[in-house]
Image 1 (cartoon, helix red, strand yellow):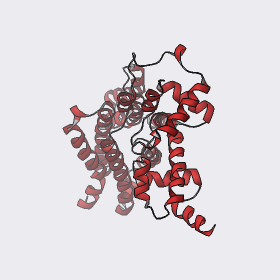
Image 2 (tube, rainbow, N blue to C red; image 1 turned 180 degrees about the vertical axis):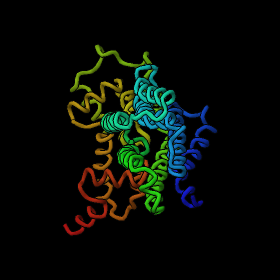
Image 3 (cartoon, one colour; image 1 turned 30 degrees about the vertical axis):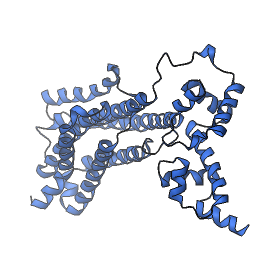
Length: 353
């Protein structure tokens, strides 16, 4: 077995091992989501070590039991990570029941090596893929809606990158299952094919690890930033009518133009008008059909059009700062969202008219 073949086979394992070390070194300071992700990467490290040994030796034994345990635990742990990221840490032990099949297979293969369980394992693996894809996507979407209802600027808080990785993770895992079924003999004759598959796994695992490690925003952070003190919350019986609340909102936006404040949160608005976050959010959803983020950013873009009418030469970055956007990219994206045009296209159209 040549050195190149061995290196290719061990690449995903080495990527996972690198990130496990990075995560473990900072483990105590991690939030709950990153701690779960650490366990996910540790499981992947052991799994891809088993894969590497299989592709270099042609045998699973005596690692069959460990390989089965890890292969059937990766998806449940990843789903727990997504749940912790989007819903916070839960001490409900029922979420760990999904790990039971992996331990069952581990015990069977430990005491009965060579047992033929591939069909059952593949069926369970397929079910796990479907559950993670459906449940994970739903949790990420719900989290994004919650973010939009709390923050004017959602940049760096939304989960668009994780959604794409989730889909890529599913596709790659399907390829992984096919690769395992084909076995060493299929890849042994052509290192280029093994290299392509190995690099695909390694790249995805690196991306998941990097995004997870650098992401600082999670449900636990959002809870701390938007939590309302009980004594400051206005009881439901003391809330204004929808008409009164709407009038207060309009007056606040016109008089103080609070929508131009950078880092604006719904709590800030609720406090100004003597209401609570939930009531304001429900009002915007019901009467305006908008999330808090869309409501504020629409007002910002309407104000931007007024500014552009007066100063055609103003730069996008200066206008974005003036409007309270977190970045020029955020301003550009919202401008196109609410006008259907880019700032340059809007200016050009105004010149022609």
